Amino acid sequence: MMLYAHVLWLAATHAIGCGPDLDEMHRLLLGLAPFTCGFAFLLRMTRPFNEIHSMLRWLGAPLALLLPLALFSIWVVFKEVNLDSSSICSSDVPATWQQLWAPVQLITVCLVTYLVMRVWRTARLDARERAGEMEQSN
Image (tube, rainbow, N blue to C red; front, side):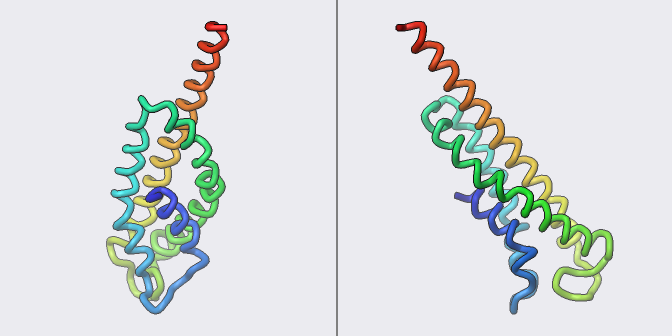
């Protein structure tokens, strides 16, 4: 669920804009990035459990659909902060954490995408292997 929450919030940041707390959502996502990466690695550690991989294989489809929106949100912030040198939700000089936000989010999205794709591949190969074993036993 952590992966879903991170990618969903990331996909929605460009539409949410700045609220009364200004850049609160951006700070939250920056703080959640290490935890999201950690949970993505835990997903990879489910390797010996073929049944779990078969279930998780289909749960990655909504993440794949949200990926373009998440990348667009990262691009919007990267362009605003790193290229145009303006702060998130204000016209001040961007703080250091704001300059790191887009690269950290991009690394997080790439890592999560890679690990989810590995789960898909592993589940597909395990399903083929089990199907082959069942055919041989018949």
